[in-house]
Length: 400
Image (tube, rainbow, N blue to C red; front, side):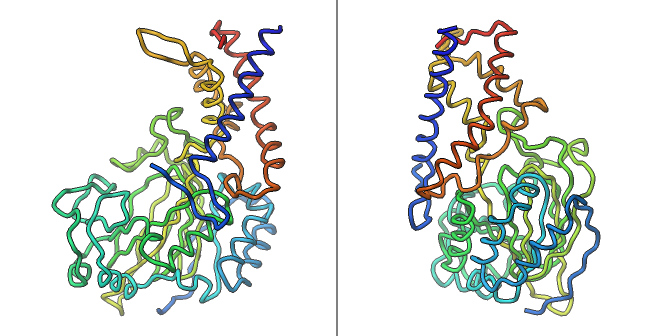
């Protein structure tokens, strides 16, 4: 019994060390910045919305509150302090928000604004850099780097001549208004965020795919129709469910796509929240009276599972820190408890481990730790007990 308590104590010590490690890796300073080492609007057209019927009045109340906001800070304050969003939407179902004209402020990107970026020395670059990725270089639906373009100066004429979707990654690094918009999301949610811009000329279909981040689509110009489907796997996690996202390197299998949940056209100023792992597709809807119009949106990726900020990885880190993963097999280290953890996380009873660490986790607020610690304990304690019990039943070694 004493050895068992000692083992649990070691694991909880590992949890504390893991918390400190994550905060050092991706930490929000007091000003909200992350530290990272390594036109004409058409009337709204609601085609079909099959959202959950649970507490519809709560959704309407939130939407009405957001509609009264005059700036993004107000929108996000209403969002993150709303129990309906935190308890019933976050990671669970899509949410559509309509804002007043002017709410986005300088974050409202237009084609003119993007063209002006070329005057400031915009360069072709690699995916993941602060760059524009050349749309002629593709691999399925994902962008692929080609050395022919990297580092080359882009001209206004080149940008105007492109007929396909233009992808500008990390827009916050090259446009002040977009930087403020992304920073507002990061500060409000207390999680690291990144902004990607997609500008499309004409009608284009974006195939079904999923992501490892919570996505907030902010429509800034033109109209775009979004369809979101129920996921086959709820809260997918990298390493537990393969790569954790699908549809980037080829068509998304029909077996991974559930019922249609949301089908709506976004207008400039609209915001659409898409939980991670939810299959979605989109279609740009050009204005036939404006042949040169670009449909533009900023996809703000709130990096949760993509940065391993889920309970499953937190507990896995604790196992490693406690010394429970220092076993060797054929000369390589492996983690017997880790295998049990993976199997457990795939089950329905292990689903809580696949959830994201609490909203505000990286906020840096002085009074946040007690609330976070309780949230962690409420999830980790029962899940840890189940994992250790299953390991005992299988005869898995748990000795540090």
